[in-house]
Length: 230
Ligand SMILES: Nc1nc2c(ncn2[C@H]2C[C@H](O)[C@@H](COP(=O)(O)OP(=O)(O)OP(=O)(O)O)O2)c(=O)[nH]1
Ligand SMILES: Nc1ncnc2c1ncn2[C@@H]1O[C@H](COP(=O)(O)OP(=O)(O)O)[C@@H](O)[C@H]1O
Image (tube, rainbow, N blue to C red; front, side, top):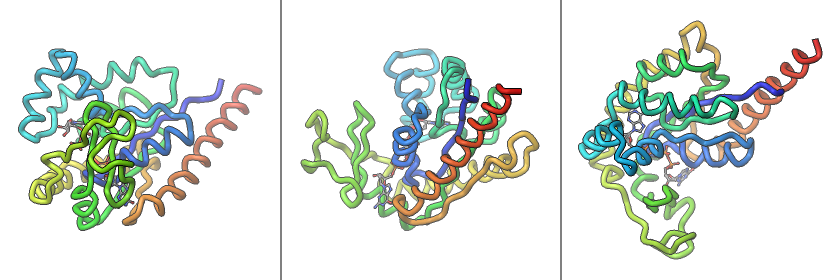
């Protein structure tokens, strides 16, 4: 049986995690797990964690680590038979440590995108909340302006995508993300899996990520074949 492949993708708001995660899931057959989707599912299901998470999200805050970890780790338990890409978790050092003790990661992708690019992108981002589909008037516009391609339902712009809200979000992101990046650079078990990609265009970053994952996944599968023949 080929060894499973596990990866996380990290980056500031607007850096292209969702966009690139979809391409990775499609190209490599990995399950795309989004922490934001898990949060929304729990809110919709009115679970204890969901009700608590909602109070933080309404204030534009991150959900506390113990709530997020309690919400996410059991979901990963259900995925032990799958290769997956986790998007939106970890966002803090405590989350990175909890994930590291729960499972072995093969790759941690870090997107390093300039502030001006993030502002530009988020000003033109429109989403279809029920499905989470993401559009951008400059990058991947909907067929009909303001309407979701699949359902025709209205698209919205998120409150915290406004330029003035973004500055605060980015400052907070920088504060919490640096210890996570250092964790993947230095921790014995985790180090050596961090790959950072810096550019302003997803279409230039994508070939490099695709090459990295092709190499990593084929190495894991050939190692698994060798192990099974010995
Ligand atoms: N102009 C342009 N827009 C892009 C590019 N890549 C992605 N976008 C668009 C898609 C979205 O409307 C917006 C942000 O992309 P994503 O939603 O994939 O970013 P991410 O998931 O990191 O944001 P989040 O953390 O959910 O706020 O920018 C690009 O290379 N050029
Ligand atoms: N790993 C996480 N740790 C803490 N809060 C999280 C995490 N992932 C998602 N959330 C919460 O859920 C909200 C929605 O997440 P997401 O859909 O990824 O949107 P965004 O990150 O762009 O705000 C976040 O704003 C945050 O409050």
